[in-house]
Image 1: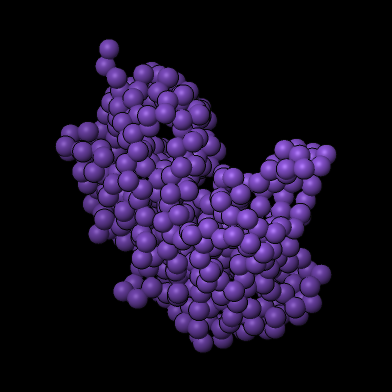
Image 2: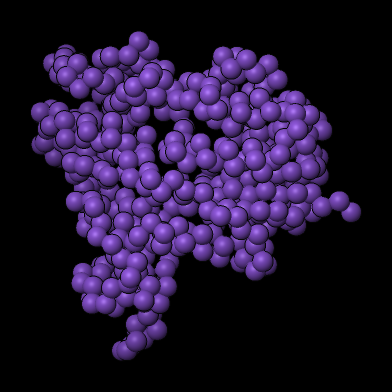
Length: 435
């Protein structure tokens, strides 16, 4: 293997025959290794393969703890030790930035990770359920390189409170006579109480019959978890052990945040806390700043920011998130924080917040990035821009545009929000260059 690909596979080159020089992407292979592989798919420009025997192993190779690793496509890097995972992700991010910005001197800060929680960290996960052709429905994750659903009994990355439910849910699904109703199952950790509880959210394409509802009510009582159903018109409580099953929550910066099922949250609570602390440290807020936060959600960053500056305008496209954010702000006594709804693909000047003087622009966009936002910063001209990204490709694109508009990339770091996977998040601070 000559090097890593951006999705965590090893890269080899065919060295003989009519396809000599052709790239081969090899799952379960590390750079420097010699492996015996199986070709899974052939394409015109490259092939896809799986290492079936390790002939000469890397010193960074470890034995994956997951029993489903050979089939499940969820974790691409369990065979690589954790230090190797972090170094790989940082190198991938650096490569994207260097290519986009055209500068090899990227000011990297140490990567942000929670090594003691490299397993058991996920407080939310969605598991697929196969099509109705299966007589005994089950749930699982997509297979490696396939749309097939792999049945799982255990997931090492799930928070223990959620993972312990997996075998019981599998049995519960199997007792339902054919999958005529279920789209997927989502597991959520509700951290509002002193002891965290689990919420099982079942996406339904048709209503549960009375017998099935009773079976899930029994399941709720036995497993001490909430069971919700999601229909096209909203959510329904099937059975609950908590007082407000449709109100989930967690604590951040000593404040309780509430959110609803189906709303986006940061999956890794351990890295989320570290990410917030680093963002506040990098910004060095004095208490006098006006902050414009885009893609704000329901307050994960907004409320800590509001506690440390003069004013925060938090912008979100989803009306439900705006309502939730304003409610969370009220509970936290953040009178200087206001959530507003806006379509962030439109120009800043279409909205009042796009015409106000701001000091800090805070961005945490979805995977598509924030191309429309950063296309023209001349209206607001913030002194600082803090950008958190979940996609190295779109982040590098946007970073290059920000630099082009007169900003200096002050510092950047990789955030390991999803250990054992090839997914890497990042944080960057930009400062306006005064002419």
